[in-house]
Length: 431
Image (cartoon, rainbow, N blue to C red; front, side, top):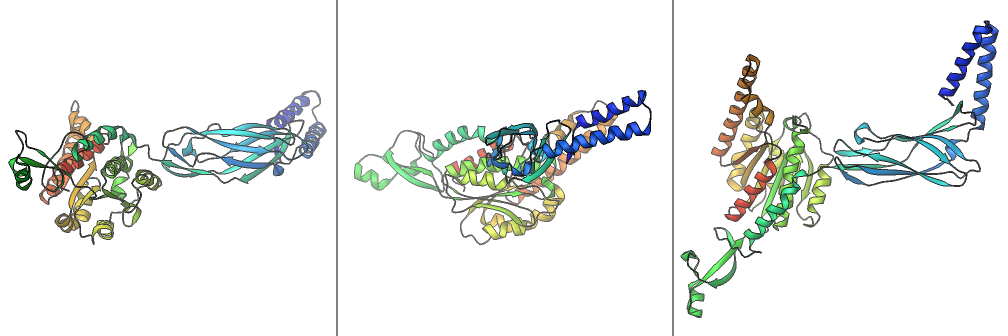
């Protein structure tokens, strides 16, 4: 049983009556009358337990998009139902509105729509659906909550996908699908053509030249079906926020652009995310056409953990036993303590067998603090920012001395810079 505000107003009317008939009997009589009317109202209210509830909605949605989810309410009884329905979702789904006026005629079915605009990645499950039916007087009614299964996976928005068309165009030039042919060490033979002025004499095919009695050169295209491993660090250093997004989300954005580009280049791509254990592993024999969608879906529920990264566990199981050289991209912050204690010990063995790139998301707020020196407080903040930047540079230089390529950029610039680095390695035959 539930009472409405109309019942509260009815009780207040009794308080007004005390002005003319100030007695305990008046209060008791009026209270009893309101209680009896409320009880009659409850008895006349239809039972919400007999309603049929069914939910439909999208299984996936990108972060920031607005999508509808519908509840279909069926009234199999002989009496119409009126009241209020509450479709409860977690606050991060941005459900609006969460309460709906409900009126279902006897034997009919109505649709109740709730709009969702998620503000966080991950799996979001619907809570209970509560239906409140009212009696004819509107003083009281009945209420019942039912679990109606429903949920959706909120995907990474992948804002860097706007850079994909331009990088694919460059990839087509590199791999020979356009008129441009690139030659370099570590490339695959493509075709023969006549020599033109400016060609490298080292590309002349002397046997073909002897047969055709004209100078012929070989053309080459970059090797395909290389192995690209992308490791996303989900440890405590990835939990901080850079601007309006978590550092982990910015790293995922770079991983998604790299995945899309490498898979289009016919390379084998493996994506790993973890800290002390591997939390996500996608790739290998996955279909190239669905690889990006699989990676986006797998990374959606992954959040940063307040744990140190175990780099030995992250890289040994996937590439430690491989016999072929791979491009290994480690997306991890350049935090001196974490890198020196966790990453440095495993890098020598990794660099000796693979091409390693460390990509880090920098914080533009640190750059802003370095430039602001108007007051004494600004000067102290600038000194701290300079010290932080110097430590990151020191770590980056140490990584480069070990043979690691280092890319340190803010959240918007990191994905295209990492993609450009991959294209440059592929063009030069260094994969």
